[in-house]
Amino acid sequence: MWFLIIILWNHEDMSSYEVTIAIPVYNAERHIRETMDSIMEQTFPNIEILICDDCGYDQSIEIIHEYQHSHPRGKDIRIVRQPWNMGIGNARNRLIDEARGRYLYFMDADDTISPYTIELMVRSARECDAEFVYASYERIEVSDSGKTKSTMCCYPFLKFLNEDEFANFAYLKYDNIQAPVWNILMLVEVLRKNEIRFQPVNYWEDFAVSIDFPTYVTRVVLLPDVTYRYFCRSGSLSHFQERTVIRKEEIQQTIDLINKLKWSTERIKNESYLPLRTYKVMLTEFYIACTILHEEKKIRPAYTKREVRDIMRSPLRLPEVIRFKQALIPNLILHLFGVLPPSVSVFLIRMLGKRKGLI
Image 1: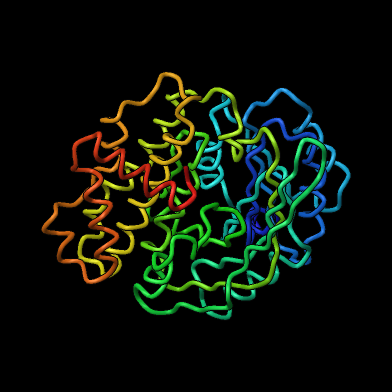
Image 2: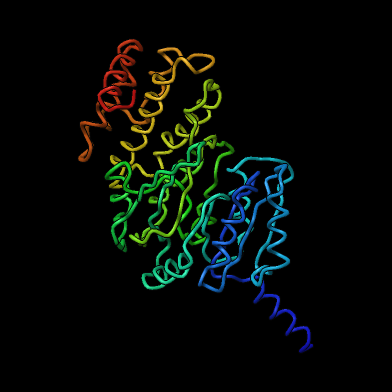
């Protein structure tokens, strides 16, 4: 009997982690070693490294197997395999379901983190009993020739401990909170309790989730420490606009994704941050409309003026918008774009887009 209890106790210890670092992997063999090395160098000891094999055709998973068998932390690496290539959205959902850690930390398979990343973020979470901890990051543009351009994306040091405080900050400016879901230490319980799921698309799937994070959490910490290196490489999904032909179907998937956000306002209609959140979502639709107009010669088949206008349809009625006490004028302007005749609406979108440098 005592022998059985000891076995069960040890099994529980091995399957319970403070943090799960979760990585969707698909054809990442060129950079996966740098990613794995940065994880193996973490100063925080209690980490599960959870890999979702999205059925690529290169040697990525074989390289990860090498770490499993040869590295001292290899026992903490676990690989789950998708039944077929299901895309990054479904891979992230699988990682949420499979994570054994109390906190979840997403990474991309070609990025790296500093050695103290997890230790720093866990310490901040414990000090404030935080549900989410965001840290700053470095964006590195990599050209085909190998040249790089670096930009630091830094938060101020802030703690949010009261209801709606974080949401009002997050929606106050469009880029107050990052769009990607990596480099955020997230309480797994929050993701599962609220049934937060990624959609099965390959572009902006993280933005559609991260934009609503502030509606689910109260206790949040922002850190100025740059802990994550995000590599934006030529040919990646981040370089969507660099192609000579863009399929309308791909853009429409993104529009449908944002529309789900737009028409989900019923859940937060009584919240103080509704005007700011509405403005952020509608501004995102405006950016998409401007992208369509900017890239219209590349898009096959072409968008009609009515289709562009309809992107700007507001989820709220005009009387509801007029009652806003925040962001009233911007919301009214964006609402107007969705109700004017298509030719007039597209003309105004184009004019404002050019003024903002988007077209």
